[in-house]
Length: 199
Length: 199
Image (cartoon, rainbow over all chains, first blue to last red; front, top):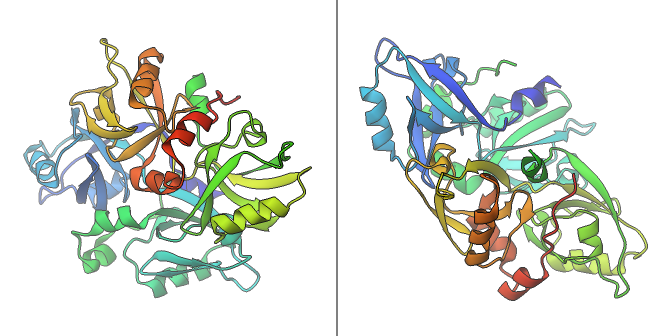
């Protein structure tokens, strides 16, 4: 199943290499939580997007330096000073995310309701209920494709057009809300990379 | 690595079969959160322990009935009425948990501090820092073995005696605190099954 493979959260740590664009940008926003540095916005078409960074990825090291405990300001200033030709990062794959696969019923219904992308009710006897989907969780990817910041109507359309089996990537709302609190709704919606991950 | 295999959080849903003991007990406590039913205490030597249930497992179905949205009371009363000779459950493996492997340094130091099992500081330049271990997370297993409710001194002893590579199973503190809030510290410490999971 390609959707499942695109959504799969991989164990371990991966290395990526980035370079700054003509304006000196990598194309990411970060937020710091629990002494970890997390990717909260990946600009479409940016160097970060091309390197496969995703919303929710944890940055562990930049150019060999451990970033544990770094604030957003410290992260930005370190990246600003770094040589743009080659920046290496060690990345842990979306640690706060997990995936749940549900199957739409014969009426093309997914089995849960959501508001601003947050799951707020589970339909009785639905596939979502049987698979233990939880409320108070944010839908951040559908079949591995980023949906963060999309209006509910667009998210609903994505569910309607999905194959019957739908793999959701979800994250507890209280963490999601913290990660995006500094980003405007407009930027989240317009700027976020939503390319289909390569396999 | 056996420790890593014992800690591994498996995707998908597994079926288990349980029977009540001579006192009509399965040997579990549950807590309900976000419309899901979670295992919060597995009595050592109980039918539930023998069936491989673990702290943090999500119960999806009991005897074919979906438990989505069930309260603790409803779950208990359903289990009380169920025929003790054969109870089937569909289980999702510890959805709120994830694993991080750290390596102790040459002084046998693990690289973080904890209070009541909650990680509260990461040591600079340690393996914990490099691997992105987070504060505000509860250590629930060490090398796949349950440590929920153990006093800090006993947990420290387990770290001291562990092989150099230590696989931690962690859960955000705010979820952990909610899951165990109805269980006395004494019960958590004394009753919990801490058998080494079979591979």
